[in-house]
Image (cartoon, rainbow, N blue to C red; front, side):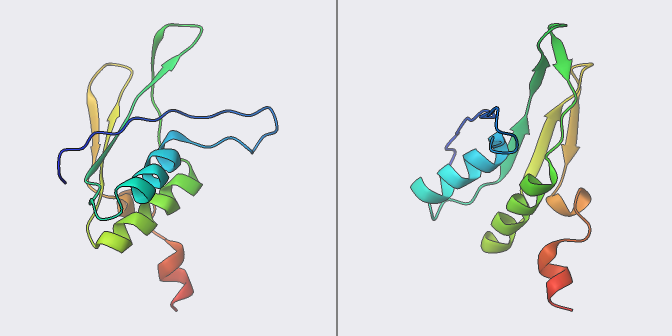
Length: 109
């Protein structure tokens, strides 16, 4: 919300699933280092290694839940911008578009 831009990348590990996704890392870093700064947007970009072209990516289930937790903390959605292989942008207005049955909603019923 204050214009701070943070970057991250997936941290792969041969002991799958010990790796950590970029979305999870950047939100954890932001929470630890900028605890009162409201995250407003996540941009996701990935390139295919062997083909040197953009790949269509989407947050995994764990990252979707992490994004949900941050949205709940600040009581506002986090926009997602995903670069598509055709170099157009795919815009998502908040995690509820990707995660309709969130754990917080399921556990409160």
